[in-house]
Image 1 (cartoon, rainbow, N blue to C red):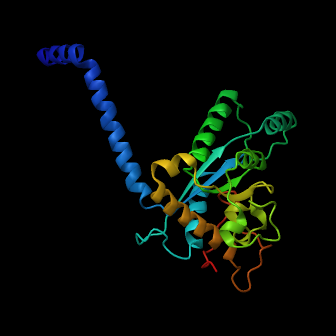
Image 2 (image 1 turned 90 degrees about the horizontal axis):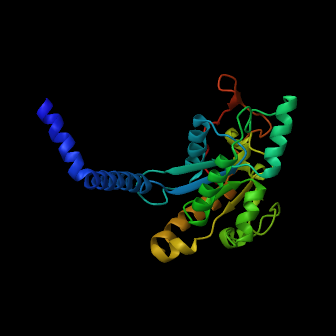
Image 3 (image 1 turned 60 degrees about the horizontal axis):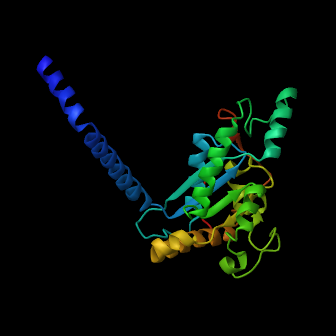
Length: 263
C-alpha cells in the first residue's frame, strides 16, 4: 500500500497538468457526445425568460404540451421532441416591487418569493440569456416584454407575416402576440399562471449560427417555424370551455388536459 501511495504521489508530481488536461478533454468529449445525441432527437427549442419560476413538473408539462401540438415529427426520427429552457430573470422594476411586497407579505408564489435577491445571480442569468438568445440556440420564445424588447431592438425577431403568411388581428406588433391570447395557451393549463403580458415570438437565425452551420441551422429554424404555425392552427376540441380551469390541488399548480391534435 505504501509503495502504491508513493507511486501515485510521484506520478502526480511529474504528470499533474497532463492528467488534468486529459481528464478535462475526456469530460468535454463525453458531455459533447451526450448533448449531440440528445440534440438530434429534438425537433423544437422552446424558451422562457421572465419572473415566473417553473417547477420541474411544469417544465415537463410544457414540453409535453408542445410535443402534443406538433402535427408531425419535424426531423423525421420517429419521435416528437421539444426541449424547454427557462431562465428566471428580473428587471430592476420587478426587483423593486418584490422587495416592497416582501415587506407587506404581498408576494405571489407564482414568481420569485421569499428568496434573497442576489444581484450577481441576476447578472449571471442575464449573461446566460444573452448567450442563449443571441447565439440562436433557442427559437420559439415566451418572454417578459422587457426582454422581448431587448431582442426586438437588436432586430432578432421574425415577422409573423413571414412565418404565417399573414399578421393575426390580435398581434401586439409585427413580431409577437400575447401568449394568453393563443388558444393552445388557454387549453394547456400549465401556461395559465404565466404573467399576462408574456409575449410569444420566433427568433431569427442568428448571424453566428448561419456562418458556422448554415444549412443545418436553416433546417432547424424551419422546424421551429413549423411549430409556430401549429400553435396558431390549434383549435379547441368540440365542447371545450376555455374558462373551466382544472387545477391540481396536490401540486398546487394548473394541470395539463389530455392533448388534442393540432389543427
